[in-house]
Image 1: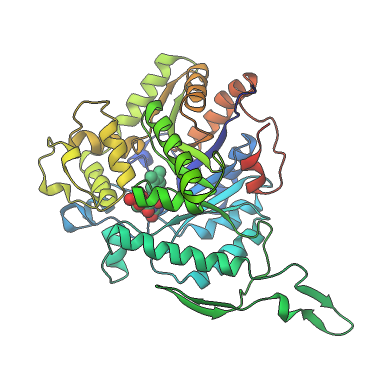
Image 2: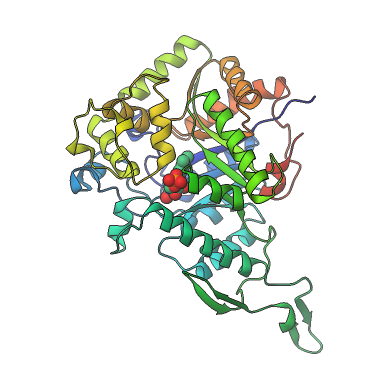
Length: 440
Ligand SMILES: Cc1cc2nc3c(=O)[nH]c(=O)nc-3n(C[C@H](O)[C@H](O)[C@H](O)COP(=O)(O)O)c2cc1C
């Protein structure tokens, strides 16, 4: 049987630092680059495309975390995913500098009506030539709700609302029939109204009576991406997603998640097993020798600010950890925020108790993803194992210093995987969806 080939995505934010806190302090971070200007994004996009990545993936949250000590002071002080600029603005900037690279964008459904969201996404799918993915999120952080002047509903209500949201988006995206645009210059008829159907949606959360304002985009709709990990989140993903982003610190957990998701696809949603791409998060620190890679990682680790790490985990899990003893076990604390992140942190102890302080450090360094530190061969060995035993279809690479961490991966790890026949040597598709489905 031919072995699966890997897919790669670069996980970043439109800001000074992404998920590895303190990276702006690294002497190799953004040397000569300004993250707020197009040349940086051109270079990053072109680097990932040179490495034949499926996509660059832009994470987002809508406001600085303010859960820790009921304030955003610590978030601001240590650049904890702060400042973060609006993510969709860089989509056309990256698209203009690349030809094949997909662009995944995280846009929250919490404060925007599905009508304008689907319009924006269709427009971006046009502008990228069919290279857009949408990471569907519903805003898990108190700071986001505070910023918009409302209170966060509980998880089950967020997912109920999300179902209605996606139903309406899908209706809008499929409302233009083939041949709707006539463009008959002689008779002056541009479009056939009977083929641009009006959507009449009367759902529990959203109402809409309108035609979709944008002509069908190259992919019809963006690739639908999801990262929910609670029970409701997994069901939502199994029902709607084309690709999933999940974090599992061990290959055993990856396997369990892959099996669970495939089981949900088949038994609950009549979708074929393996029809959703399972993309797992990893952090890679590569060098010519193992000792050099370990030294690099140690330095990266030393840059994470202790208090900043508590602000980050407080924001993402929705718990004010300034009120807790840092030596307390994380497992005992219920979280209203990202369940999947908490589970991954607890499991990162491999059976040993993980304290709040340890979890904060792990989280702010590597978002609880497995850290792959070593030579290109070491990294490739582990990636093969994650695909073969863990069921991974691909990997989301968590940034450290940029753009260097991606340049190193492309120059050192990509050729090693190609040599082993575990990575593509060219893009074969024209859209992101095609490339995600590419198996050779
Ligand atoms: C790997 C990963 C990445 C995520 N990235 C984002 C993000 O960039 N922005 C966001 O608002 N939520 C993000 N989330 C949150 C989820 O998509 C989801 O809204 C949240 O996990 C709550 O659902 P859950 O409890 O089912 O996990 C991420 C979650 C995971 C596991």
